[in-house]
Amino acid sequence: MNDKVVTVDIVSDVVCPWCFVGKRRLARAMGLVRAEAPATGFVVRWHPFFLDPETPVEGSPYRPYLERKFGGPERLEQIFARLREAGRSVGIEFALEKIALRANTLRAHRLIHRVQWTEGTQADALVERLFAGYFLRGEHVGDATVLAGMAAECGLDRDEVAAYLAGDEDADTVVAAAGRAREIGVSSVPTFIFNGAVAVTGAEDPAVLAAAIQRAMAEGGSDAGE
Image (tube, rainbow, N blue to C red; front, side, top):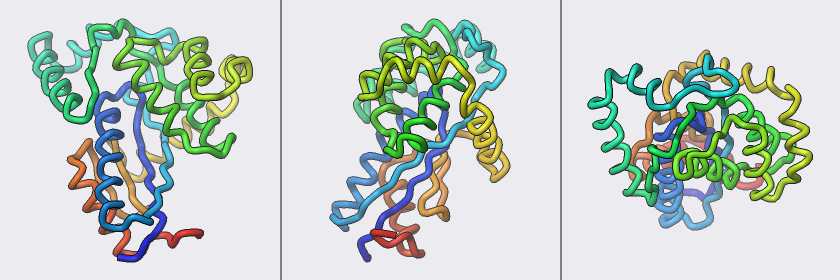
């Protein structure tokens, strides 16, 4: 297998717990690939998806929404139990009881867009912080002040981010990107697309993701430096 740079396009929403699990499993999958081809590089790009675009800007009560969606408290607890088990397998201790509000994620996706496409840097640290803030700390990732604080922790200028989030810059771009994801057939997240050719939907086992990466490389990925 030739050493290559693999592009990894991830369609996700920051209020999707399985996207958090998937992010951690992807990291392990990339480690498996590098174990066989140590010089393999990865360029990870995050793309927006809105699980519930109708969520109010100020948010809505978290647990009642999920109970309605999944058919009651008992069914929800079963789902939570499965999620917690999956989380522990990749070092995530979900604290779902801390989440008061289901967030509108447009601002969070705009922030990711700014870091990734405007700042020209990979957004891994920011995305990790957003997931951790929501699912481990119960922070409201739809709130501009909270987001500016998270951005500052990741090395961005708090005041510049706050000013950016106070307006609607890039909102149309982000909404259009989410629309394009649905147009190409993405209906659930996380969805991973390797080298623009091999797609995997769901927070699959690292071995499954690694096999998909290797298949994309074998089918002709981008050579290092391209």
